[in-house]
Structures are given as C-alpha cells and as structure tokens.
Image 1 (tube, rainbow, N blue to C red):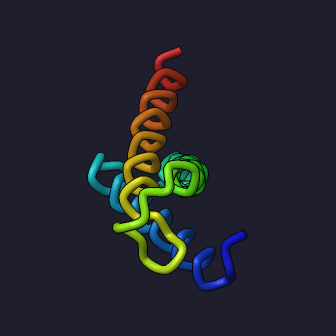
Image 2: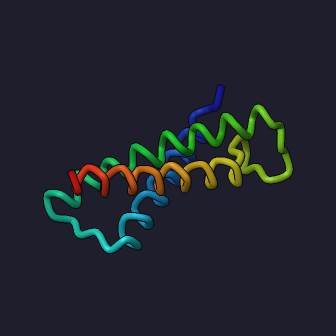
Amino acid sequence: MPQAPALVLGVTLASVYALLFHLWKGEGLGRKGWRDLLFMWLAAVVGFASGQLVGQLWGFIPWTIGQIHIIEATLVALLFLIVARWLASERNVA
C-alpha cells in the first residue's frame, strides 16, 4: 500500500498530465471546458493508478521515484487520456 507522499506525488503528476493534455488539445476553460478537464483529470488519475499497479505486478524497479513506477504510470495515464479524449469527442458527435 502506497504511503501518503507517494499518493500525493501520484495525484499531482496525474493532475499535471491532465492539465497539460487539456491545454495541448486547445480546450478552453468555459463551462464545457471545466467539465472536460474534470473528465480528463479522472482519466489521468485512474490511468496513473492502473499504471502503478502494472509496474508493481511487473516488478520493473529501475525507474521508480520512491514507490512510484513513473514510466508505467505515465504511459498508462497518457493512454487513458487519449481514450478519454476519444470518448468525449464521440459523446459530442452523437
């Protein structure tokens, strides 16, 4: 079980990834923009946690910051952000 500093670092990194992805895609921060940012944040946090789990299961130790498997968590978070963006665009089309 991760300790408090690892949880804070993980949520902080996931939040930064969500914000950067949201801004990179050119989304504004109007009413719809805040809702999309929240959706991206949830996707990034769930993706980061999933990547952390993958890293723990694989046991790929060399690239960790404390208890955080940074490479696996980052890659899965980005994958979740891409899927979330795709789902959000599909929802807007329908």
